[in-house]
Each structure stands twice: as structure tokens, then as C-alpha cells.
Image (cartoon, rainbow, N blue to C red):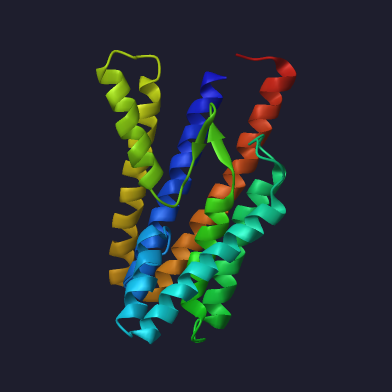
Length: 224
């Protein structure tokens, strides 16, 4: 089971890297973050008060696109327990196909860039957990808070949850790494770097089925 958890953590970090990768592309596209919306919601109010209505509508479009992605994820996932459902792998491969199709056939459409926050909304809406810890793979706000909280507990002498602090820190680093990589690829390749994101989603989705099969074998055989 320890081997399974090591592979599972690696899968989570790959997903977080991909979330960061797509987020940096979205920022370079829009000049706005597309994976988290506290700041964007504030900007909607501020830009409206400044009478920058076009910019207000642009950010509102990002907000709605992300939300609709979350709605779709909620429609296709079942329950609030991450039990390695088959549909999770299908969702990730679906995102890969959607990005590829959009790039080849829809890229010249004015609303094409809004597909990016939609994809991240789907990813973020997937209920993923590790040993009872809810994992978000498209932004780090919650990770940063939790890492700080568990560091504080660790400094107070509560050592039993130290692994959670390191887990969140690794996830934060993975997101940063994905953003760094995404920015580099966008600067070098432009819009074609979206195909890299599509390949990443396909690999992660396919790897998920291997992970699921391994977990089922462990349950059947009672391996430790």
C-alpha cells in the first residue's frame, strides 16, 4: 500500500503541474488568473466602478467559464468520497480531447480563450483527496493556508500531522513548477503550447487507470 500511495502522490503532483501550466498560459492570454477567483471577483466590482465595462465583461466571462466547468465536473462525479472512480480518468482524457479539438478547429473564434478556465473548472471540480485531505490542483490559496497552519502546529509540538505540511508544500511547488514551465512554453511556442497541455491531460488520465488497477489488485490480494 505504501508503494501505491507514493505513485498516487506523484499522480496528484502531475495534475497540479498541469493546472499551473494551463494557468500561466491563461494569464499570458488574458492578463488575468484563470484558476482562482477571489481577486477576479474583486476586479469585477472595481472595474465596473471605474466604468471599464469591457474589462468587467471579460473577467465575468472567465468567472462564468470556470463555474460551468465545475458544474460539469459535479454532474459527472458521484458522491464526495474519492474512491478511484473510473470516470475521473475519462474526465481527464476528455479535457485532453476537448483542448485538442478546440486548438485545431476553434482557435480563431473570439471566445476560444474562455475554454481554458472551463477546463480548469472541470479539473478543480474533481473531488480528490489523500488520506482524508482534500486536494485542489488548480490553485494554491488553500494549500498555502493549510501549510502555514500545520507548520504552526508543528512548531507548537504537534508532530503527528507534519506530513500534511510537507504534502501541501510539495503541491505548492508543483503548481509553481507548472506555471514556470507553461510561461516558458507560451513564450517559445505561442498558442501551440496548448497541445502540450492536451498531451499532459491524456497521459495523466491514462496513468489514472493504471493507478486504479493497482489499487484494485491491492484490495483483492490484501497486499501491504
